[in-house]
Image (cartoon, rainbow, N blue to C red):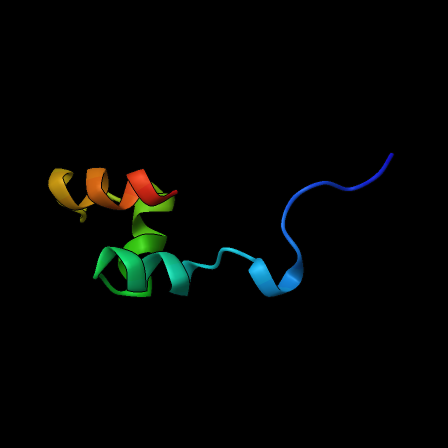
Length: 50
């Protein structure tokens, strides 16, 4: 089966999401891991980019 999706040069990384959301890469990681340390407003705004 052929792979679909983005090329390596177009990969979405934690860093690119963080830059677009205006937060740190650690915050994006905490959102992805469902950490209770992240405010709900930050979780929603970052989650929209994921």
